[in-house]
Amino acid sequence: MLQIRHVTRRFGKTVAVKGVDLEIGKGEMVGIIGRSGAGKSTLLRMINRLIDPSQGAIFFQGVEVSALKGAYLRRWQRDCAMIFQQFNLVPRLDVLTNVLLGRLNHRSTALNLLNIYSREERLQAIAALERLDIAQTALQRAGTLSGGQQQRVAIARALMQEPKVILADEPIASLDPLNAKVVMDSLADINAREGITVITNLHTLDTARHYCSRIVGMAKGAVVFDGAPEELTSEMVRQIYGAEGTEAVAEAITSTSIGKPVGAQGAKQRRLEPALAG
Image 1 (cartoon, helix red, strand yellow):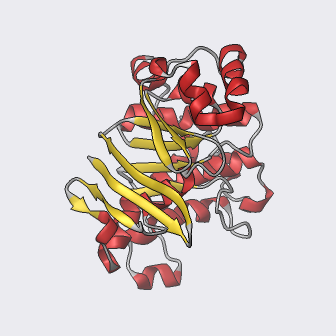
Image 2 (cartoon, helix red, strand yellow):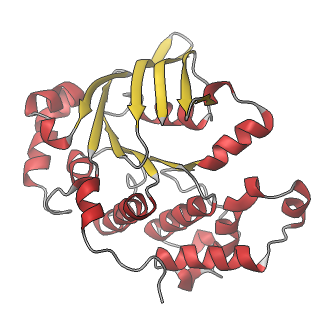
Image 3 (cartoon, one colour):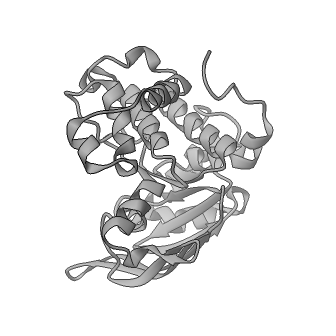
């Protein structure tokens, strides 16, 4: 489905991502782990085409998305939704309007300029907010919400794009443990129910092990591990995290903030709540 072939990204003399080769299948939930500066965010931004590779190519269903331009590029960025650590909402606009912005690449320029949305689009936006359990905030300004609420609004906006892939760049890095769990539960639910491929950068190893059926470890811009959570040994964790590896191993063993690892496949097997509240 998604193929990353020999992808490298340089910023001047600095190599941020170095020769990455990955194949990610439809419906996978993949966690990318590594220290700050390992190249995780740069890799996601290249997939979404916020930045271009210096070398290599990225393909989706046989189409080279790293070469797309104009309307074809906008279509890819519609199909490949991006969720950011800092939410990227418009604080002065109400929550409902922020969610409706996810429809921009589905609509004509005239409708977007006039800020006109159909009744069906508004109902779709409200349903997305209900699914994330924040419909009660629809008329509040986005800037008045807590960090956890804002991230759920960002996920609802991503759902409005009707994407085939969701990229989440450190989606819980600035959240407390409770809100982090709510956000990760939401992404896992979307992955399990809709079969949407989710690729998420995560700072904590225990979160990746709990939610993801596949983990990619990066160090110094290169992929040094790619496999199931149970295949990730303590020695490999130390290779990924360097001097922080011992602490990461201890955290993964002792952490109880999330619970026992289940992975995406386990999430698909458990009983889920109805898709829309009410």
